[in-house]
Image (cartoon, rainbow, N blue to C red):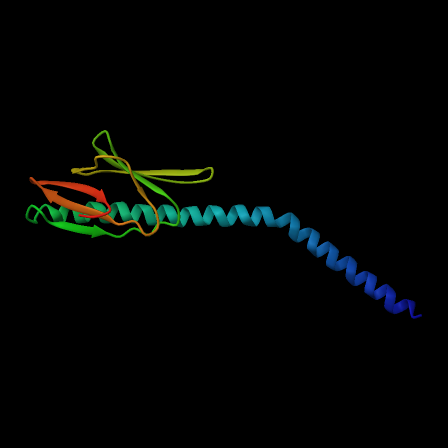
Length: 137
């Protein structure tokens, strides 16, 4: 039997075992970093949505009663939209991460609206006021 070849095989297995051990130690940190960056991107998406909602609400002031406009949102996880203290509040949560954006807007939201991927959010105008609805106009 050739002991030199066996020794090289054992050395390769030790190198591979050390590499896999290091990878196993780094995986949780890499996962946390991935989750943090994903949440940061989602926060930017939510902030852009809230800005678009404000822009479209301003445009709706010029439209006639009965007008309706769909505002697209493509969240990767659940958002909550509500009116609190005269401001529109958009909250995003994912695990331990949480972020809220607020904007002063003259629109009405009757109940808290949960926005998930594929949700349809509408601005509608009636009696001179703008309201946000989910589902249909």
